[in-house]
Length: 317
Figure 1 (cartoon, rainbow, N blue to C red):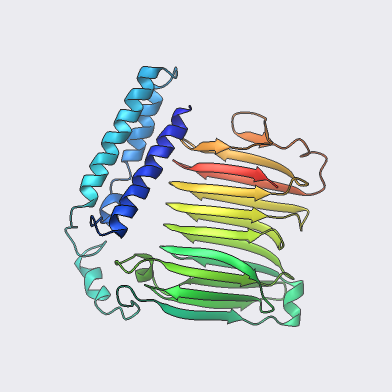
Figure 2: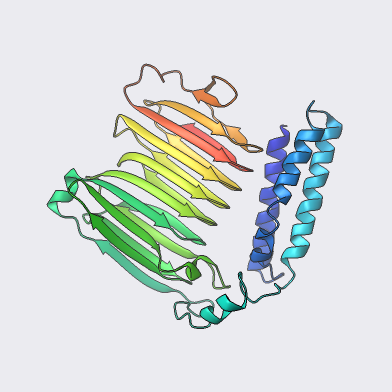
């Protein structure tokens, strides 16, 4: 078994176990304590390079040992109450006391957003910018509107804005302010999106921790870009346009992308310690992979993957 896959599996088990223990109130884990120790992943990567050049069993054991020790340290440090009440100290704490956007523990609030579809929108390119931490995003179908969003809000707040020119609509769906990006113990938010199939879409997502499940196979998707930290991404794209670009940049994440067999596809990777699984692809060189019909197909998908310690999977349907 490849060392990268084993290390990724250990990290996923660690994160899952911590979340489970926290959900059952076995421990109180302060994730904000952990972020300041992100250089430990550089240490883990350095140890892996130094001791695993020849893929020896001893090198593997040393790398795994260092990973377990570092995760043990993070587990201990994450349970220590932070010195300051909030992430950036007393000044932010005073501001947070005035935040009226949070709801009570165990409660949620339903919010609905919509942007109407007008005749001119069908011929325009539409750019959708999405941002928000601690949120699950799901594309649940199409709508006669340009976009709708049903939100089950437990913390923070959201806003939907539209800016238009003669040729482009720009939609921005995001948390109203940065205070909403941190969970204060109320749980995450759930967002169900619906999009109109007529426009050509460009989707840009920027988020920290969260979950994304988008089936865009029936939409004219020109490009999809995801920039996030600890996230789970499940994306399905179609062949509605001649060219579709997919760019994913992550820290610690699980990414699954599904593409049609009729489209030719090229994958470019910059993945560090990440695990990669690309069935049906031929390895061109260390960083590039192609489908057998890449040159001959009239529909092409270009995928660019950039991740530190992530699991990347690209499947064909």
